Length: 233
Image (cartoon, rainbow, N blue to C red; front, side):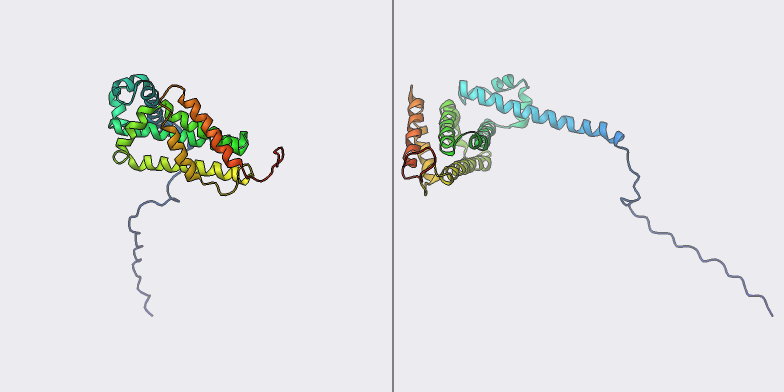
């Protein structure tokens, strides 16, 4: 009986080369990641700081000197070079729009605080008076924005307009819900009244008059409101 013929071992197939998976990738210690992460974040944080500094300076300079002031003056107040300013805002129109959006955000971000600190009807008065004060302090910016609203950053400017309407609607709704003003008050009507009152703030003493008219306007909304504690029927 013959011995069985020995057979050569079959070669083990080699897997095709593939990219390493997450499970096969060695973990990198957090201590090794931290310095590079900090270094990566530092330029972004620095850029944000300069961006905010430019907008704050632009708001101040436009308020005191008008929207036609040389942008070198804005850069000087911000503590940056003119090249840095233009990297963030390539045109005067873009800077005007940016400054406007920043101010609107500051104005609208204060709604929740007002409602937490004051009765809803008084919060409505305070916010409307702040709005008029904003327009009164920056007439040059308001005029310049009329010429750029359909050009540079017009989407951002339109979004800011919508924020104003939303903030006003929130205040009116809160005052109505609390019973401080009569039901059915229209925030769009108040927005129209605000626009009209803002037009008279460019004369001496006119801002005080506008503030009184805001109070008178809200007093009118109080007529017919539900009886609330502390208010005579």
